[in-house]
Image 1 (cartoon, helix red, strand yellow):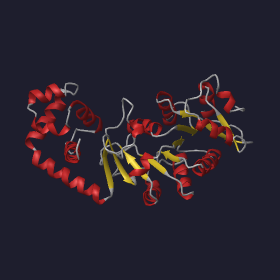
Image 2 (cartoon, rainbow, N blue to C red):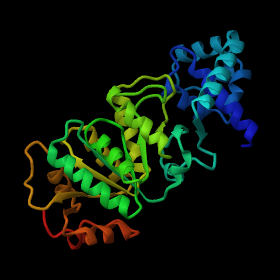
Image 3 (cartoon, rainbow, N blue to C red):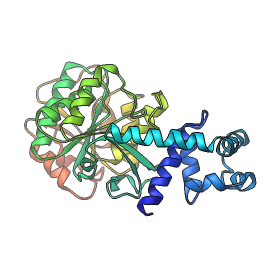
Length: 325
């Protein structure tokens, strides 16, 4: 696609997102089914039905009515929204553009676009590691997050997390304080800040040359499904996923499953001399998966060796990287 085609595609995405009842997943389906999404403005009802056969009849009728009766209004709204994004210094990247992270492209459910607040070049960092965990983390887990973030930033790894309270906020904050790189992946549109307590941290991420990203439409609010869906991006952006604290049925546990599906390295750390805290299932989960737990400060070298390996460690050979469970 050339620049003009990308621009038209972006305006069409923003225009369709202004139709009440057309949300993120519907828009993904439209984008997938049409060779060029901007062609939707010229399709008659028969061709629209044929192209979007997987959508409900009511949804197709809604689209047809809107694009043929409100085209001028929708186009104007899209132009206003695009200019607002530019004014806010938010980049709107399609998956075929150079700054779009290539690590997201191989997966079936990869995003079609990203909205990026801050510096989009951070997304091409090829040594990202996702630190994830509970919003109500215990003090031991907070300490482990700070220790590991310092270790990783000292070795020039970028930190990916989800800008939630607890482990996420601790990882982002530590990376910034250490002058490292960090990327926050949102579970809602880029125009929202949730929770409100992270507003200052988000501003610091942006001001320090880092990035806040979302695949959701700018005005879309948060919901549980969106938060779970975004977890696949934290894993896909990263060469490794590190769950610090979680329960077996939590969102972090879902991120662990994404890491396995996406063939990402998976490990955690235990601070030397500190016992396992009741309610933190992460050690049991990784033990059952045959994934390593590194003791700090004695096994940093083993962790670096693990990260340096190109291939994933098989279940039968992981013991060489973690002497203690």
